[in-house]
Image (cartoon, rainbow, N blue to C red; front, side, top):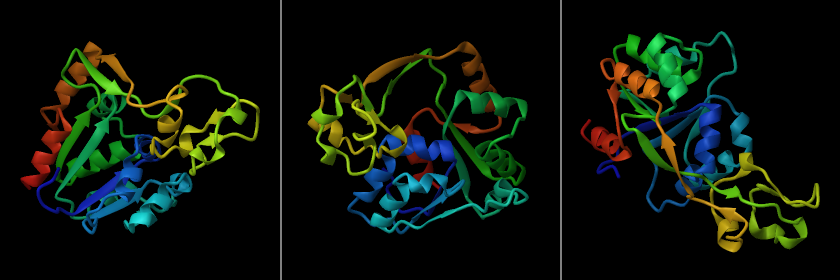
Length: 232
């Protein structure tokens, strides 16, 4: 946890917002007791807001906005010139790391890192596949086995992640899941969360991460990121 309030602008690509939502990030934000007056959220587009994210942010009155849809608008250049003290990409997938080592900038995140670097800003990255032979990761909420719709309480999910009407088999719509875990609490034999899996890191991904350590600050744990930000 941060020891002091530092202005934070959290920028989400569409894919990143969906992943964070499934792991309960926005759900947990909406339930915090402390004020979030130092926190702002910026989304790549408004597409993800319709999947409960906007609802959760409004509950906590967290300011949010989306980047313009204009294809001619240099989104990453604009972001990199917003007087940001540092830019931290967390997490950064092995695919993005590989592209970054070769100068490919074909996504919002990669363009932001490239533009920020050119602007002389401090850049940090937290690679998903970093410096280890293997890491243990946890899965978000998921349905582990088929179940008849009539066997589930329709009120168990108030966010639309469970479709109990379109067919006899209950469908789990992960794009609407906010990670509240209520389905797991009520039906632990059907839904699971935090299931641990071991991920074996490819040598090429370790090499690519090492290449970037000469140009970017590479973090190896969330705690390391918190300590770094607190020291700014």
